[in-house]
Amino acid sequence: MADATALEALAREIAGCRRCALAAGRTYAVPGEGNPSAEIMFIGEGPGFNEDQTGRPFCGAAGQFLTQLIESIGLKRQDVYITNIVKSRPPGNRDPLPEEILACKPWLDRQLEIIKPKVIVTLGRFSMARFFPGATISRIHGQAEKCGAYTCFAMYHPAAALHQGSLRSVIEADMLKLPKILEDIRKSERPAAPAAQTEPAPAEAHSQLKLFGF
Image (cartoon, rainbow, N blue to C red; front, top):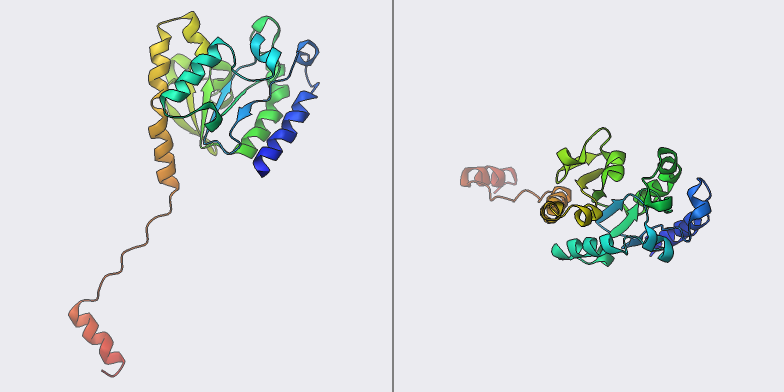
């Protein structure tokens, strides 16, 4: 409950944010939504028209595809957390500018601190650049790497499949790698089993008994 309360308070701060010029043209800020204790956090680039009108992330055509991808690994949207690098819509759905990404960085930092996901899935090249600086998405998509305290996994943005049909199967295949990545992280975090107690050998047992006068 504490995490949910913290995210709600953060969302109210984001709604009133005026740190960059995007605030002047937005209908609603789009902080993000999902499970406050999510193990997987999806980070896209920025809200589009539908997101700007509703205040919800990934609720248009690309969002429908993302929902299908999440369901393909046995989860629902409410099991994960979904947000973007920038929290307000860039006009005309243009790419977010460096200064806009920088202005929104504290919001994303605080979301990460509250949620503490095991896996961050970057959707698209601007999100990828935050965690994989200097990388190209065509080279690293579908690969998991340790980025500080997090395991990061780069994917193409779901919208890419809407514009380039050949990427759909690539995106679907990358998503199917997530369950194993998550399970490997869970295993690595489990405490090691205590060493099994073995019965002393007969000679050792006799020696121990002699110490007690038997």
